[in-house]
Image: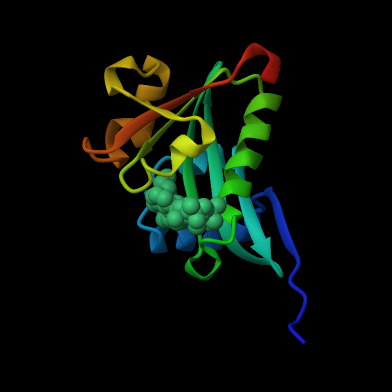
Length: 153
Ligand SMILES: CC(C)(COP(=O)(O)OP(=O)(O)OC[C@H]1O[C@@H](n2cnc3c(N)ncnc32)[C@H](O)[C@@H]1OP(=O)(O)O)[C@@H](O)C(=O)NCCC(=O)NCCS
C-alpha cells in the first residue's frame, strides 16, 4: 500500500522560504525581487515538503504572476494548474483586474488559463518597473495578460 500524501497550497511560511528559493533555482526561475512579495507567495507542500509555488506582485489593480514552479517529480499531475488557480483566487480577493506574466518556457501553457500574449510596451508601467520586468527576466521573455471580468472580482 502507498503511504498517504497530504498536499496543501498555502501562504509561504518563514521556515519554507529557503526551500522555495531552492525550488525556483532548480526550475531556472529568477529569485530577484521576490523577497518583497512573500506575503503574496503560495507554496504547495506534500507531507510538509515544498513541491510547488506561485507568487503575485501587486501594483494597484494590476499584478504580476511569477515564480510558478512545480518540483520535477510532481510535474504533469495537475499541481501547476492548482497553483495558478490558487493565485487567481488570491488576485480576485485583492481586486486585481489585470494579471501579467513573463515567461521564457511556458508561453504555450498559460493560454489554457486565458492568458494572451502582449507587447511589453502595452504592460502597465507600474508592472514594468518590477525587478522581474526591469532586470531579472531576459528581453526574450514573452509578456502575457489575463484580464479579470468585473464579475470575477
Ligand atoms: C510549467 C509548470 C509549472 C507546469 O506544472 P505542471 O504541474 O506540470 O502542470 P499541470 O500538471 O497542471 O499541467 C500539465 C499539462 O501542461 C503541459 N505543460 C506543462 N509545462 C508546459 C510548458 N512549459 N509548456 C507547454 N505546456 C506545458 C503538459 O504537457 C500537460 O499537458 P496536458 O494537460 O495536455 O497533458 C512546470 O512544468 C514547471 O515548474 N516548469 C519549470 C518552471 C516554469 O517554466 N514555470 C513557468 C514560467 S513562470
